[in-house]
Amino acid sequence: MPDTEALQLRGLTKIYPGGVQALHGVDLRVQAGAFYALLGPNGAGKSTTISIVASLLNKTAGLAQVYGFDLDTQLAQAKRCIGLVPQEFNFNSWEKVRDILIYQAGYYGIRRREALPRSEYLLRELDLWEKRSVPSRTLSGGMKRRLMIARALMHQPRLLILDEPTAGVDIEIRRHMWGFLRELNAAGTTIILTTHYLEEAEALCRDVAIIDAGRIIEQGKVAELLSRAQVETFVLDTQASEQTLGTLSTDAGPVAARWSAAHQLEVVLPRGTQLHPLLAQLDAQGIAVTGMRNKSNRLEELFLRLVTQDPTA
Ligand SMILES: Nc1ncnc2c1ncn2[C@@H]1O[C@H](COP(=O)(O)OP(=O)(O)OP(=O)(O)O)[C@@H](O)[C@H]1O
Ligand SMILES: [Mg+2]
Image 1 (spheres, rainbow, N blue to C red):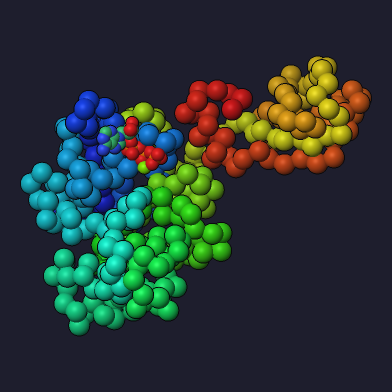
Image 2: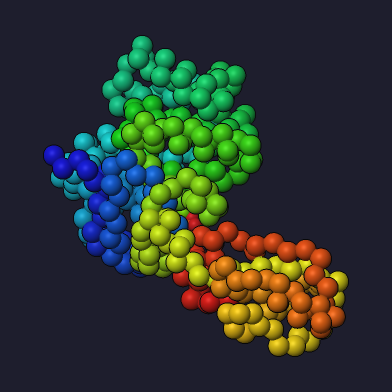
């Protein structure tokens, strides 16, 4: 069995009943052991792709293989390899937290005797042990998200797919979840996640694909993509109001600048540009800069440029 590839998609196409074409031939290869980010704007096709892989949704055309198992001909084996954390909560809200995990294990033929210690381990890891006996509807949003992760891991899948795992999760718990996912990946589980927090993709993932309007528009190592992010946008706080700007330049050439709010100027600069000349020119125009920050992280810059095709976005 070819087991070096955790996921292979070729020409994956989806046309929803009613005619919306969500996927236009998606090609994707994810190596076993990868920590992979699938990024894209709302409606790009991320959840559609994931739902097809997890066989919650039928594809219209194309090939999908999970650890070499073809979804069309070896569905049961493929399913056994996958743990899915869907974007929407979908557990029975009246069931108790621990029971949800035990029932899930039952779907995979895991007996209660084995499921109990596994559920305890996961509930403790995900900080839900205290909540094990309450109905799931009484959990907070962030707790429900963690319960979904615990449930997806009950049968020890080789590939964990998370659709927006940290949406609505506070920063402290998010960091805790990152640690947990890193350990899981280090222990050999392949992880694919979608996220709208690009800093999350940058912090966790080694590989990334960017999907837009149902097509993969970029794919590669996070580090390589980042090294291609050639410009940075800075936000400068000033004491001036939105006065007309004179010419601005640095060693690298003319500088694009615009007022983005009262007293706030945005400038786009090539990476590594010396800032002193720019600040001096602004000062000479009566614009005193009192603070500055990077508008977004580098992956965000790159992402915005790719999906909007706007060099100053
Ligand atoms: N059940 C459905 N019926 C018809 N069209 C759908 C259905 N689900 C999704 N779509 C459409 O398919 C496209 C892709 O949606 P999808 O949910 O895969 O996007 P996404 O990348 O996950 O977006 P988000 O970041 O908002 O979660 C969108 O145009 C969406 O409207
Ligand atoms: Mg989605």
